[in-house]
Image (cartoon, rainbow over all chains, first blue to last red):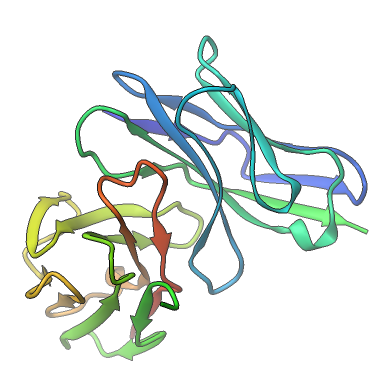
Amino acid sequence: AQSVAQPEDQVNVAEGNPLTVKCTYSVSGNPYLFWYVQYPNRGLQFLLKYITGDNLVKGSYGFEAEFNKSQTSFHLKKPSALVSDSALYFCAVRDIRGNTPLVFGKGTRLSVIA
Amino acid sequence: DTGVSQNPRHKITKRGQNVTFRCDPISEHNRLYWYRQTLGQGPEFLTYFQNEAQLEKSRLLSDRFSAERPKGSFSTLEIQRTEQGDSAMYLCASSLGPGSHGYTFGSGTRLTVV
């Protein structure tokens, strides 16, 4: 079975400081990994993905994520946070084998304080 | 193409009534997914279609729930005899193939059962 853990319900960071939102996953085989962002009363917007290749992937709005197979992690990072980054962030995983749908974590609320 | 469209955006209904939601995916996407999101939780998978065929249903999809995608284009999700526990955001997403590059989500339909 596939699963995702986002251990932090809330992350607070000062504007201009680096941010990290944590994610660990579990799949039987190799993973496809994704980060999505959700603003109030909206659907999910794609930020970035890891399919294969470089462990550091870059995405939208200056976000990046590092795939670590040994730690089964895919933490989301940004060097300098903006107030407009405040939102709900979801990590998702699916096994590259088969047709299983994406499984999402419960989300982490990021609050960037001016 | 303007992305995935969901209607209505909001629905308030009395307990025991039936409701139907519609999702129009990106036209070239052959897969369509329904997820449910409750407050403080990540999206939970309900069901998905490849073209008009419904390929998988979650245990969350009780016999009061039914989904169709009759011509492999738009999809409807119907909830019969609604209960207060059905109050949630219902999200639709689409992808080309199994979604190795992620899904595109609609803005969701927020259901409130009173």
